[in-house]
Amino acid sequence: FAIKTSYGSSSQPKIGLLVRRVSGSWDDIYPVDTSGTRPIIALNEMNRQVIVMYTRTESGGSIKYRIASIDDLQFGSRKTLISGSLNNVQSTKQNFLDELIAIAATTSSGSKRQMITISFAP
Image 1 (cartoon, one colour):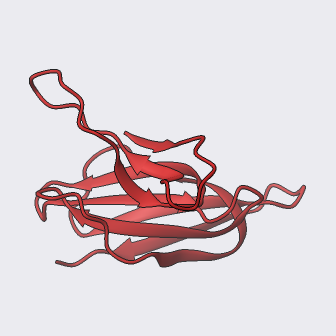
Image 2 (cartoon, helix red, strand yellow):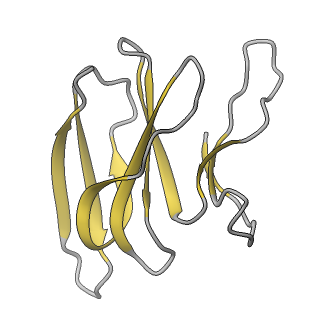
């Protein structure tokens, strides 16, 4: 599960990943970023990748993402997925292979949406 915490310190994760093992036990939080809001997760089992996408700030902003290997869940550098004054990134719920569609809403009072197809080649 991609989660937003209520931690207020810049040394603690605001965005994290929770993992429940087959045995029913939960791992400690895997930190993704120290700021952000409304995270979602995408899984590429074939390439053994997990991608967390989220809005950069709580008041809206660019949609960011970070990628980690399923094997160690150590997230790489923050990258911009969609630039602009956006919020509420959404995507498909099933596993993906090499391309993924993401959509986000503008933070203005209009109902504009921006959509992007992204390629995550191994």
